[in-house]
Image 1 (cartoon, helix red, strand yellow):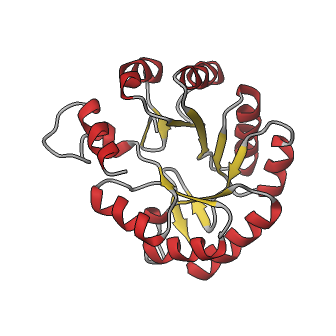
Image 2: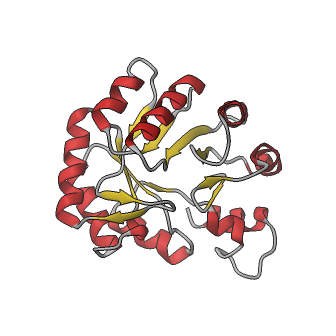
Length: 216
C-alpha cells in the first residue's frame, strides 16, 4: 500500500515510478491523503504496470465512506477494501466489476482500531459473504478487544469461499507467517515499509519491499 498512518503518501506517483522495477502485482492506496485526480492518476499508473489496484476506505463517517466507494467506481479500481455498509456499497459498485471486501467487527477512529470479538467477526464475515462480497478486510493487528489471530481464524471459518485480507499492523516477518498459518489469503503493508521498520538496518524503500516480497 502506498500509504502511511492510514493516509495515501505525498508524492505517491513518484514513489510508484520508483518501485515499478520490482514488478509488484498488487498495489493500493487509501481514500484519505490525496484528491480524486491524484487517485485517478495513481490507479491508472498501477494498472499500466500490470498490477491489480486496491482502494481502502478509512473515512470515519458513513457518508464519507460511501462517497469513497463512489470515487472507487468512478476511477475504476479493481478492489475496494474497508467500510461497513456492505449493502449500500454493493449497490454503488453494481456493474463495475469491482470486488468488495468490507471491515468485519467495529472499526473506529483514524488510524483505525478494531473492536469486536471472534464471534462478532464470524457473524459479520458470514453476513458479508452472503450479501455477495468477495471477502473481508480484517484489521486483525488493530484489535482492541481480542487476540488478533483468533479473529483471523474466526473470519477464515466463516468465509470458506471468500478472500480473507488482513490489514494494519503487519510490520515483521513473524506476523506474516502467523497470518498465513491462521488462514489469511493476503495482507496489506504500508507504514512498516515507509518507516523502515520491517527490515531494520536496511535503508531505503526498495530494500524494505524486497524483504517483504521474500516473506510471501
